[in-house]
Length: 321
Image 1 (spheres, rainbow, N blue to C red):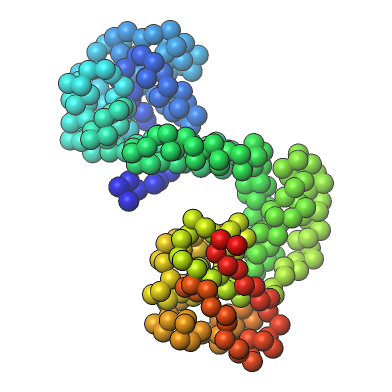
Image 2: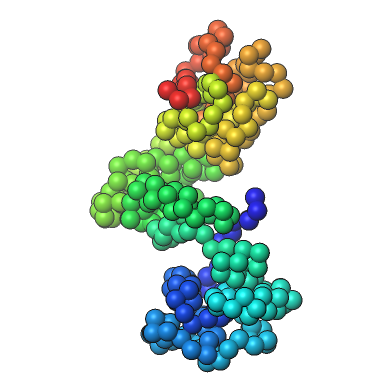
């Protein structure tokens, strides 16, 4: 990765924005989503910037940029149309170990601002590392269609009851399963539809029962020609909720990127075309885990008595079908 994605704590930001035109206005509006601790440096401001300074009570240093103005800030945005000034801003920020962004000059940036989908407190940030803004916009449109405007209410609900669940549901995996059932089921629908009181009553009832379904499963995914772009929605969902994933060198490693980050990954030295590690996968599934077994190509599973007689859920998915 050319850039490391990170979210900064908003109330610790002390932002310096140099410039008073339309570009500066856009940057001020963006930063105002998380902080009012903003200083604007500009000898002259357009009407939009002046209004933002007045209504949001921002600090305005009414002069052109000069060395020494950024000593109290921890993040700098250069939004001027003067390349010489922008270069000077970046060089001073670099000498002071302050993160700097020079608009439209990626070589003079310690960070870039991604495209943001705001479902506060849920935030989705998208970047092409500056290579294709059009592609970013297309992807953003797709994601926005998938995320209801009220999606952040799910996160607020989870925060409200997190400690209650932690006290009553023992084990990290059990709690994760419990929350998955809450958000994916009728309670989640009630939250999204604004029926918060009904959702809380149903949630409290479920928490008292505390009957998180622990039946494990094994999902074999035949990757066929090995193109992850052909993953079906069902296969993608299975990878995202996996507790463990098995794969070998014949499987395209790009598939592993779709597996839930904190799932256990078990690399198999012997290709699945020779032998499938049914025993280990079964042990995990019978312990209640959701196991994914990635298979190169598309071959009929060999007969295995232990697998056939096990009560765990058994699923086969074919990439692209």
